[in-house]
Image 1: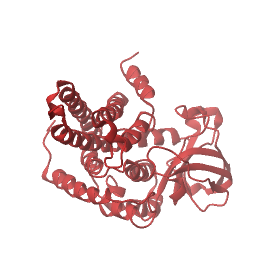
Image 2 (image 1 turned 180 degrees about the horizontal axis):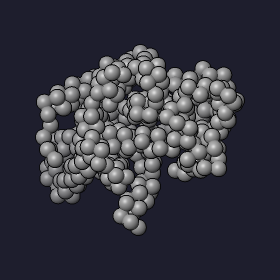
Image 3 (image 1 turned 90 degrees about the vertical axis):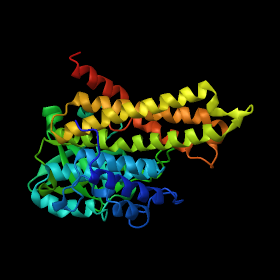
Image 4 (image 1 turned 180 degrees about the vertical axis):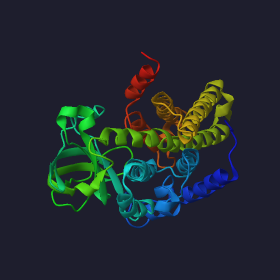
Length: 377
């Protein structure tokens, strides 16, 4: 493995970092689905990083994609915006790229890659969070179409989405092999999108409940083959659990920079905070967590590009990066003390936005289960 960056990868990092810093200066409470923040992300290429060039994307491999995402996370403190854009890319666009037929790709992928249309991934249900085999949303075939019925919850981007990637049961007798993935337009009759949830974290990524009542979806909108839904979902998770979490590497990098600056300049008892071993050692631990998470994550992306990855590799990277992001934000909060909770810093928001990393894309406990399984336990 080569630990150096190519000229292209470094140029991508520098370009995205500069653009992300400009995005991070915004004050809008929610992302604009057409203009402003989403347009800025699209101009940086974030909406199509890993999409092949023939379908309108940048055509980056997993390592280069993660490098760009890390730059975005370092430059832009609005993790909600980045999560919104990256969930659109990895959980909506990429499944269609990798599993849709050419007709579906040609119709749907270019506008998604350009950010002209916004995608949402609809799989989670109240009774089926980590257990995707417990889905109750059904899709019954009637000739050339399916009728979708059921309710999805915690659907990120749903309030602003143009396209929903929906996972529904088409053959209950086959368990997870009876789940099918559908590309469903927002304005399909029978699709009802609820009001955005109030939530304390990732606030600029709107989420809502989506209900399907005899929603008619043509058979041509099946992504992959009937019964392939679970495999398609797991395929999208390999992107999210690796490349998306590179944004938290960027967040940790930024928090360490801010904490070092604060500890070096803040005077207490006649000397800088950094002169206290308890402070300097805490920052050293922050740096150690970042670098170990970075090594695990980029190793996983390198394996993805070589098609040599395993669920164990991905789970290790996801788990360690998520837990490191939370602990690093906690440490920064401790070192900034009261000022961490003021509007003069982004420390408290970083902590709130780090906490969901333990839950989305598979909880930390699910990752531990995958690791144990990978070890033969």
